[in-house]
Image (cartoon, rainbow, N blue to C red; front, top):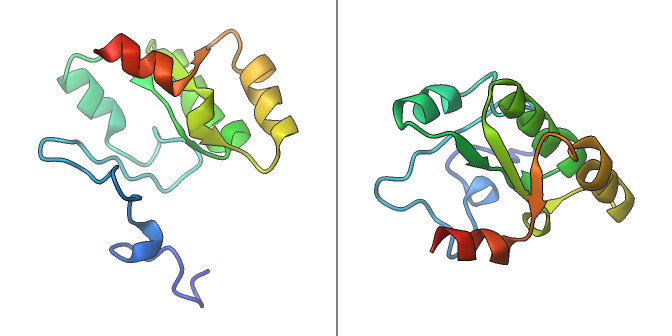
Length: 119
């Protein structure tokens, strides 16, 4: 990836998709590891903001999303995973992570349910 200049900070390959760009006041958490906790300022942001619930989405459900969810639960946060805002290499890995691996540590739901709850 490095030889092809893929995933270079500030280029289109790492930019948010249309409609989900950061807005004024949004906190950006960039991670350089499987879990969002170890190499980011996530925990400091959450504690400083008095937050106790995390809505965790992203790619690689059974790895990155699951690692971040497990660590968050271990740290005492309520973890919510909108399963239709996550992806894995295939449906079987995604389902295994949502239905088994994270069953006791997170609330699995859908994006529409999360949006309705936030209104």
